[in-house]
Structures are given as structure tokens and as C-alpha cells.
Image (cartoon, rainbow, N blue to C red; front, top):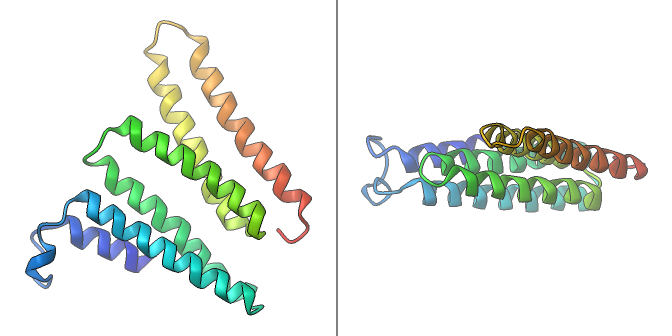
Length: 160
């Protein structure tokens, strides 16, 4: 995760002295892509450790993968439409909850649930300005239901 954060920060910071000149033009899009690549590598490494039977040691690559995805989304918010990034975070959060159920790793369920709740809160706050007052509560209720459904489905699997 720290590697992903460092890559994203150096990619977005054009004033870094010790960065290759080729990397100083990097914008938030490439920085986020680097964070997503680091997340994919950490996910693969964590799955490899899981396959070898080292579940305890595999926890940290899995946590790092989820946090790298969150770092990539944070970098994207700086430049791109926040609605699109929040929608992407919502989709990635739902995928994280499903991944947690599929590979029996609660860390993805927690991070996915946080992404779902944060996206739901973002859209609920945006909907407060709408003329209908019931819509923010509906959005928050849907996000809460998705998070609870993920927890209940994950609890059915004894490995999580």
C-alpha cells in the first residue's frame, strides 16, 4: 500500500527532485492507474499466499490491495467528475463485497462496505439539495442494505 501511495504521490507531484524526468508529467489519471496496478499485484500476491496456505501472512497484501484502490480513487477525485468517481467507488465497493464472499477474505468486505457507504453518503448529501426530501434517506438506506447484505452473506461462509 505504501508503494502504491508513493507511486501515486510522485506521479502527481511534478516538483519531486529524485523522480525521473519522464515521470514528472504524470497526471492524476496515470497516478491512479499506477495505484490500481499495485492493487492488482498485491491481490495476486495475496491470492498466491492463500493458495500456499499462508492465510495469516496473506492478510497484509489483501489489505494493501484494498487501500491502494481507495488511494487510486482519491487521486481521481482531484481532477475528474466527482459523480463519476463516486459511481466507480460504488461499483468497486460492491465488487469488493462480492470478492470478499468469493475468496473468504473479510478485508475486502470491510473496504468494499466503506466504499459503498461513502458513495451512498456522497449521493445522499448531493440529493439533499434536490427538491424531494425523501431521496437522500432512500440512497442512504440502499447503501446500508448493500453493506448489511454483504456482511450477512459473508457470515454464512465459516472461513470469514
